[in-house]
Length: 74
Image 1 (cartoon, rainbow, N blue to C red):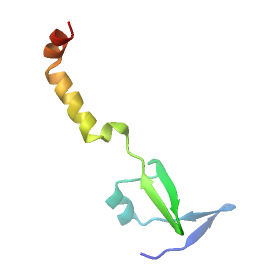
Image 2: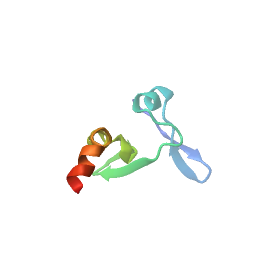
Image 3: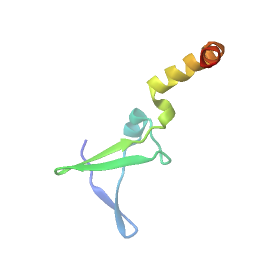
Image 4: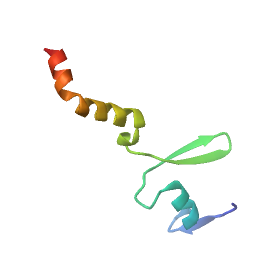
């Protein structure tokens, strides 16, 4: 995909096609991490910490076995 920067007010902006936004599951409210690697710019959506699959699994196990964990804690 090739694109150019657009003038937006007194700044430059990048217009992203709807198909690209859908593929990345991002919209205008999604915070983006911007990094530079040599001469390349990388945009990466910042996902909520709750999207961590290990953390989600830990929370499910904790809820499922809460009584057992409470007994072990005594």
